[in-house]
Every structure is written in structure tokens, then in C-alpha cells.
Length: 461
Image (cartoon, rainbow, N blue to C red):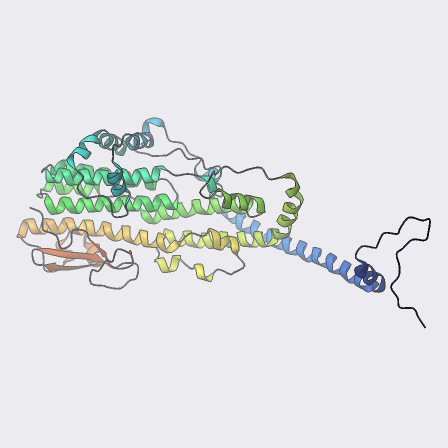
């Protein structure tokens, strides 16, 4: 009978003990089944070949997208986007910075100007008096033709844009100045300072970044609010009307949106090439949130696993980047023709495996909403000027908008805007991004009708 007792590892007397064999089960399994070793070898070789083939195919897909963009002379790096420089004597940015540094505001007034609904509310006269130097600098800055703030774009993840908060705060301060000038009866000065607001918005929009574009749009809306106050409280004259027409914003927001999306695309390419192929870089981005934004050097022992992880991830990363480029190119084409927010934002259609694309694409519905809002408000301003002209000639507002009675530049807007007279005033609004006529209801969420800010107010005298 075969002895089934366990094999002793005790060495004979006088000899050193024999060490126990590590992992005896796997050792015996490998000896007993040589076909398993062959199967594992075939699996490893096959996996490497499949991975290599997929990597080559993904590289071809990505290179095709990049070559098409280079052939079209599209910017693919942030250096190409921000490569130009502005002469110091033409650059308004230093004056804006000096204006921000010269602000003299209490914490309460600073909070008021920072709030989403801030601006346009009367500030105490002593506060405006303390900030006349900042207001004078704003007037000088707005008169310059160009604006370029000093931002380090070498690493878009760590780029900081503190000037945007300053610009928005300064715009609201200028809006409060306009309100004070109207209260004092200085209508002509109020008109000129309303033009300062519009030029400040144009300068901010010159920075081709989506967040800068959205801040510029908020500043332009503040300017339209001041214009509505001028129309409501200032006596109309042909000279004033002509000046207000000259000062209306000239920014073409579909083009601004297109430039900003191109910058987002270049930043996305940088992130794909510099972060998504290195797990350590991604952890540094997460660790920098709310802390020191400077990256640290990874430990030396992480180099082999980082290289292996990057090589294993490479095919999917390249396919992801190629999809990202196609998606952004489609959004740029749609932004150029001022498409609806629904057409711009198709995030839900992105495949689940495209992790990088889903992380990087911006909220295009907000971009489309901002463009629609800008175009409607400019049309409203043109029509509002015509309504004031009609009232000064006939002593009342018209019962309905008649394109034949409006100026040539305002006539097309009459067919797209909704209007009704209410007593001695009127309600003027355009359809918002939802495309429905909500009878002039604006809940403040930007999803309903876009209402002219003077609607329902007292007519100017």
C-alpha cells in the first residue's frame, strides 16, 4: 500500500535543515500541466500583438485628425493661440490692473459688487468719491485698442485668471457710477460711461478662453442695464441717440465663442499628451485643488509602473483624443454659425469609454445660451432706441412693432422680438434658448424669455 503521509522536510542527522518550498501548489501545478505554460505564453504573446495592433490603428486615427487640423492651419498648441504680443502703449491690461489695485471698498461693498446680482445698485456717494481714481483709470483703459493680461499658459491646468473677478467688479462699479450720474442729471457723461462698460466687455472677450467669454458677456449685460437706465431717465436728443448707437457693442459673439472653443481644444490636446499618459500627473492635479498648484517630482520607484501604465493605456488614450478632436471640431463649426444650445451640447451621446473626452469637453449649452442672449440683447437695444424716437415724435409708444417705421438696422429685429404696450411703458423680449414664447417671463435662470431690462419701467423724459 502506498504511503500517503506528508513528506518530511527534516534533514538527516548531521546535515543542515532543508528549507520548505515556497508556493508548492503552483510549482506542482506547473510541473503536472506543461500545457498551461504554453497556454500562458500564447496568451501573453497574443495580448502583446493585439495591443500593438490596436496601438498602431489608434495612432493612425489620431495622426489623421491632427494632420487635417494642421493642414487647415488650426491652432493645436497654446503657444499658437497666445503667441502674439501687444505693444505696451496699446495694451489696456496694466490700466485695468492699476484700477483694481486702487479700489477702496469696504467688505460689504466688495461683497455687493462680487455678487451675481451686483452692479447697478446705488453706491453711497462717499464710496464713489473714494474710487474716482479707479473710474478715471477705467476710462483711460477703455479708450485703448487692445488688451492682453499676463497669464502663464505653459501649463493650462495651473493657469490662474485673477483679473476676471477684478474686471467684473470694476464693471459693476462703473455701472453704479452711471446710475449716480443719471441721478445728478449728467446724461451725456452717463452715456459715455455706458460706452466704457461695452469696451471693457470687448477687451475681456479678446482673451480667447471660455470663462473669459462668459465674464465678458456678464459685463456686456451690465452695460445694457446701464443703457436701459439712460433711456428711461435721460431726455432724448438726436445727438444723444446717435452717440448711443455708436457706443453699442461690436463684439461678434459667435466668432468669440469659436475662438474660445479653439483654445479649449488646444488645452485639451496638451492635457491628453501630458497628463492622461501619466497617472502621477493626474494625481498631482487632484492634490493641487485648493492648495499649492506647483507640481512635485515623482519618486524614482514609480517610474517603471508609470511607464507600464502609460503604455497599456496608450491605444485607448489615442482613440479618446481622436474622438475629442472630432467632437470639438464639430462644436467649433456649429459655434461659427450661432447654433442653438441644443445642437451645441451633445454630451450625452459621447461613448462611456471616452473618459478623457467626457472629462474635458465644456458645457456647450452655456456657450450657446450666452451667444443667443448676446444677439437678442443687441437687437433689443436697437429697437429700444427706435421706441424712444417714436415716443418723442408721437408722445406715446406704438401699439405694435412695425418694421417699416423703424430704422433699417432695427427693422429685422422687429420680426424676431415680441412687443406689447402696457400703459405708458412697454414690454420687449426675445425668445430664450428654449425657443418658446413665455410671455416675457425671465426667472433669472437664463432659460426663459430674454427681457429688455427697461420693460415695464417709466419712459424717459
